Length: 143
Image (cartoon, rainbow, N blue to C red; front, side, top):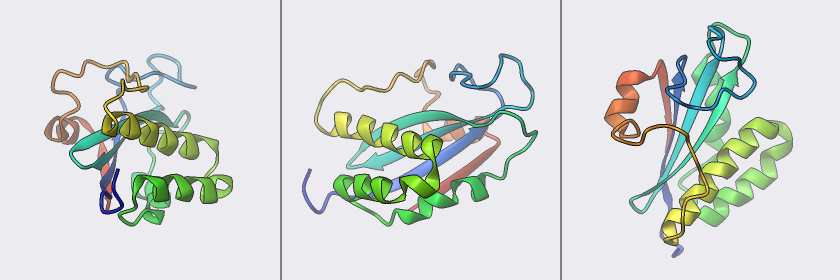
């Protein structure tokens, strides 16, 4: 990846129905769980990661939860990894691993490798931005 090739978008989508996403710390059918799907885009390629945003709150403020993503300002992939390493102590394990997983997936796509991320959802149209917007409770975009 060249120096000019920068991450152009970081988006996170919030769901109350996991649409096939892993349940993580939630039990199937738990109405208090909130799920997140992170999308990082660079050079026409996308990296994905999923997480449980909350296992015990009825509602979560996605803007507040995702505010840590403001640390990314159109970075290169290398700069993004450096940002993750610099902030991992204050972000915590869940947020750090979420971003790292999406960056690893993006890196694999950029280098023509098989994606390490298994979302466990039917990719037939569900991962298109328009479908994500229609199906999500909230959406946050940075960059």
